[in-house]
View 1 (cartoon, rainbow, N blue to C red):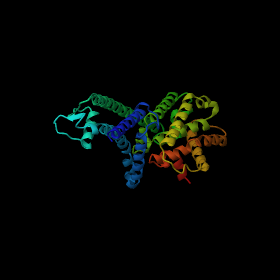
View 2 (view 1 turned 120 degrees about the vertical axis):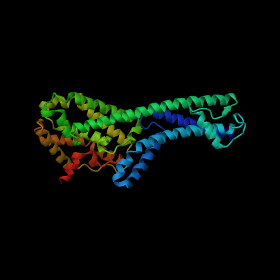
View 3 (view 1 turned 135 degrees about the vertical axis):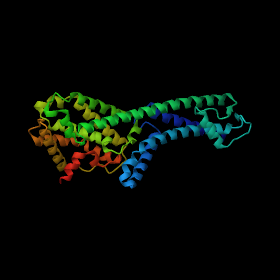
Length: 364
């Protein structure tokens, strides 16, 4: 019985350490054993409960990320404590003795000794009496120090990535005249139809989009952080960016903007935003019936409104509007379903993140 209990404790310790390694050090989406399924379970319950909060729903959902992060840290700490307690419990009063000479062998005492042995706060009043348990206490102490260092570093990296994501969202929101409209973003990048302007801004957007995409790959818990304002939503970031690049590649005049349409910055912003939406949808969004069938008539109205806005800003557009719309519809079909699926998974409506399409629908 003693051997089985200690073997179970060793298994718990190995699982906990493996999960910390895969989540923090290996840093790949869906690489963890327990942390991410646990966090996503909390997320889905949190979002489900939020539906009962009415107008306060967005504020309630904004607490999901911090709560899930604390819960994951608690899970790791609890598993390390439990594993240590299972190893130490059979040895209490024998190989591991109390300094006050009062023998205690209950499991709560084992949890206390195990928890203190992996912490950095001081002594538990229990000391190992055999070489094997001295090495175990030393092992726990080293694990505790490493765990605290890793967690502090991880927290810093997650919040730094969150800051960069929010900065990108705010930049896109500002460049689109706070309208969440891809056509407005194009107008700001190339004012008065000057193809030589906007190059550095577009390059910066593309580079930051790549960073945000990889940050979600490295720190999947970042997905759980939401804010009340839809402008900070990942689904809105990708919706505005992909709509803008779809308009660039389909509606701008080839003779005047050919080099821009084939530029590395346009390709990088398009690809990185598409990869971000695809990876988050496949790995984070709950299973659903999937996106609705494309509303081609709605897309056509959106394209017509975008063309009118671009022309009013002095930007040369394609002469063959029908061919341009066919290209736009082909590009949009690659990402529209992703946004439709991702937005509700992040507790936002598609109207919140795809503002121009919502306006086109309201004109029906």
